[in-house]
Image 1 (spheres, rainbow, N blue to C red):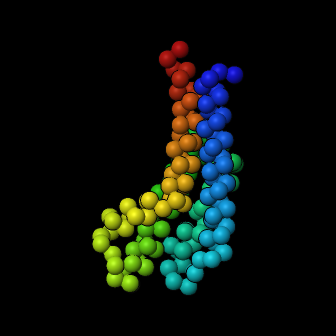
Image 2 (cartoon, rainbow, N blue to C red):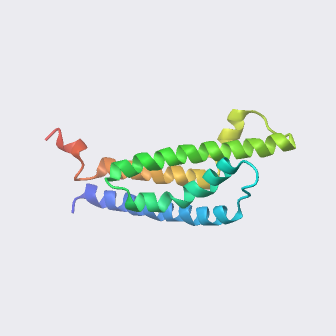
Length: 137
C-alpha cells in the first residue's frame, strides 16, 4: 500500500466516523423537531443529517457520493438558516440574512456536515485508483 493509499484510507475513515456522528445527531433532531410549523424546512432539518451515513456508505461510485453529500450539506445549510432566520425575526434580534447564514455555518453540525464533504472530496483526490491521476501516465 502506498502513502497515498494510506492517507486515502485515513481520510475515508474519518469521513465515515464524522458522517455516522451527523446521522446520530439527525436521529435526535428528527425525534425532537416540531413539524407543525414550516413542515418542509423542518423535515429537511431533521431528515438530511439522518441520511448522511447511509449516503456515504451506499452510494457508489465514491465521487457520486461526494457530490450527493455536498448537495445535501448545502440544502441543510439553507434549511437550517431559514429556520434560524424565522426564529430570530420572530424574536426581533436578527442583524441580516447573511449574518444569520454565517452564524448557522459556524454551528458544529453544519461544520461536521461540510467536514464529511471535504474529507470525501480529499479522499477522492488521493485515491490510487482514481482516473484523475491516470490520464497523465
